[in-house]
Image 1 (cartoon, rainbow, N blue to C red):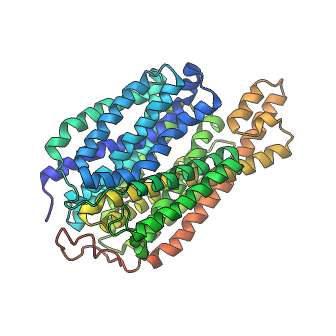
Image 2: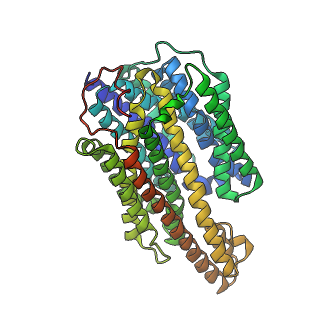
Image 3: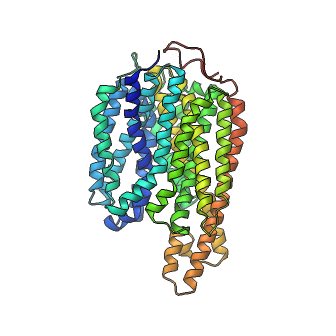
Length: 508
C-alpha cells in the first residue's frame, strides 16, 4: 500500500523535531563561553550542563521507543514536544547554573521521546519499501543537515543575541508540531502490548547511563578509576539486560535481531559512522576558532557546504540502492568518508581553509550515505507494531557512536597533544587543552607567550592528524566487513509485501 499526499506532508512535520534536536546537539558548544560569563558555573556544573542532555537522551531512547509502542507514537511525540518546548523556555531565562542543568535534563527526556517516535511513525506511514527508503533518506538528511547547520545557527544567534536565544529557537518549531501533528500524523501503537518490563527499564538505564558517562569522562579526564568503573558497571548491567530480554516471551528489545548478520552490520555501520562524524567535530571546531582564528559565525559558514553534501547524499541513497546492492552503497559511503578524513589529516597550523572544507564535505557526504542506508535496514526489520523499540535501538547506537567518537578520537588527540607540548617544556596549565594553552600564553611576557601559542597549535594539529588517520582506518576496516555481512540483502525494487510482512523478509 503506497502512501498518499497526506503522509508526505506528515513527513515534513516529522522532520521538524529531528532537525531541531540535531541542531541542539551541536549548538551549545558555541554558547558555553557566554553561559560561563553570565552564570559563573563551577567546573563540575559546566560539565553537567554539557553532559546531562546526551546522558538523558541516550538512557531513555530505548524505553521511550517501547513506551511509544504501548501508548501511541503520536501521543508520545506530542507529549515530548510539549516538554521540549517548556524546558527550552525555562532554559533560555535560567538565572542559575543549577536550573540550567535541570532544564537540560528535561530537554533530554523530551528529545528521547521525539527521536524514536518520528522514526517509528515513518515505519508505520510508509509500508512500500521504495517510499520508506525515500522517507528515511529525508529523515537522515534532516538529521545530518542539522548537525552541520547547528554551528552556523549558533554563531549567527550569538553574534546578535544573548546565549538564551539558542534555546528559544525551539519554541516556534515545537508549537508548529503540536498544531499540525493531530491533523497530519496517524496514531499507531502495538494492538496487543505486553506487560511493561520495569526491571528491564531499570537495567537498560543502568547499562547505558554509566557507560556513556564513563566513555565521555575518559576523553575529558583520561583513564581514571571512576570513569573505568562506570564503564565496567554499564557493561555488567548490559549483560544482565540482554540475559533478561532473551528469557522473556515478549521482550522490550528482541536481541534475536542480532542473529541477523545484516542487521548487526547495519547497526555497526551506523555506530561507526556517527563515531567518526562526531569525533571529528571535536577537532574541526577547535581548529577553525583556535588555529584559524575564525569567529563563531564564520566558523559556522565553513560548515555550510558540508550540509549540502550531506543532504545530497541522503537523497542519492534510495536511488543507488535501486541499482546496486545496499552492501556496495554502504562500502562506497565508508570509503568516501575515509577519503574525507584523509584530507583532514593533512591540516596544519597555516590554516588551510580549502582543504578543511573539502575534507568535511567528503566526510559528511560519505557518512550520511552510510547512515541513510543503515537506518533503513535497521527499521525495515521491525514489524509495524514494534517499530518504536527498534527505532529506539537505532538511536541508542547513534548516541553510543557519538560518545565513543569523542572519547576514542579525543583521547588519541589529547595524548599526542600532551606528549608534543610536554616535550617542548610547556607549563602544566597548557597541557590540558588548546584553549588552556592559549589562555596561559596571553599571560606570559613576549616572546614566551607567542612561542607557547605556536607550540600549542602545532601540537594540536599533530594530535588532530593522528585522530583523523584513526577515523579513516576505522571506516576502511568497516568497508571491508560490511559488504560481506550485507551480501544477502537484495537490491531494490523488491516484491511487494503486505504491511504486516514488510519488516520480516528484508534481512537474512
